[in-house]
Image 1 (tube, rainbow, N blue to C red):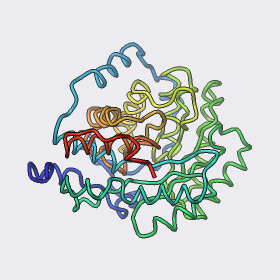
Image 2 (cartoon, one colour; image 1 turned 180 degrees about the vertical axis):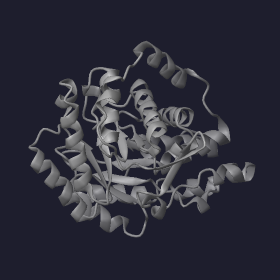
Image 3 (cartoon, one colour; image 1 turned 60 degrees about the vertical axis):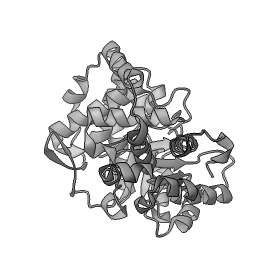
Image 4 (cartoon, rainbow, N blue to C red; image 1 turned 90 degrees about the vertical axis):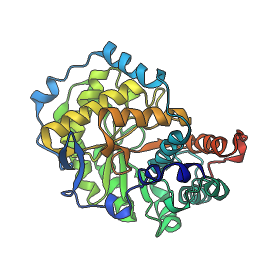
Amino acid sequence: MVVKSNSQERLESLETPNAKSRDAEPSALLATLSGRPLESNRGIPLDLDWVKQVRINTSAVERRAQTLSGRRTVKKDWQVAWLLRSISCIDLTTLSGDDSDERVRRLCAKARRPIQHALVKRLEIEELDLQVAAVCVYHCFVETALRVLEGSGIHVAAVSAGFPAGLSPLEERVAEIRRSVAAGAQEIDVVITRAHVFAGKWRELYDEVAMFRDACGPAHMKVILGTGDLDTLPNVARASVVAMMAGAHFIKTSTGKEAINATLPVGLVMTRSIREYAQRTGMAVGFKPAGGIRTAKQSLEWLSLMKEELGHSWLHANLFRLGVSSLLADIERQLEYHATGRYSAAYRHPIA
């Protein structure tokens, strides 16, 4: 229908990295920035001078962030293309106290088929074989998720390192990471000790994240900064830089449990930290906003941020993720409106 008949290029631009490309060796070329090829992040020795030189103009950051939400958004077929790209970058997440094996199985089924089949046919996008990037669960549900997702290419991510507070003894946090990797998790979302940031203990923060990276082994590590707890944008920038120096594959805004989660000003600071790190080291780090992202419009804002600040390489699941639990339902409603001219009731698009 709409997307295919109007422009095959839009379909080709939506092709998402397959499982092989997401599992590429750390030394493989991962992205380009201003024409420069970048490798996956291996980490570098802690550079305290770099950390101490970080400066943030908070008012300028806030003004820039407002342009992302205030400008005219993409429309019609291009909006469909961007929404489909958002789906391909989703880490579909359930991290509730009442999680169960059955809930995780339903979530994984939704991950494999994120859009209702009838809607896929109306949009004529069957050849995309659209799926989300990963399913994110607690450690005890890793094996359940792996069984349901076997052969799909969708990764299983486990939250670890004392999630969400990150305050359990360091040895226990490291052991928790190793257990999740041994269970088969391909990605690990770890939590930093926020107190290290408040106290300016950058060596301790670096050593902590480096230990987490070592415990992750072959699994990709996403480092959760808990930005809503860090108080200031300079704290966010410095924590971002230290996490990348210590070997983070991704830096992530939030656990989703803080009072304030992913915000565009924070995202702007973190993406510019990623850009500076890439320019200085020749290595690419991914970005994952998480918490409070519930509408299709918000997903378009985050994609705009990535494209404008980091470029096309960061519009794929190997370098950009959206940590969400309820966003998918609103994206489906927007796609159905595009296909039929009518908004469907939200209950017709359950998360699982």
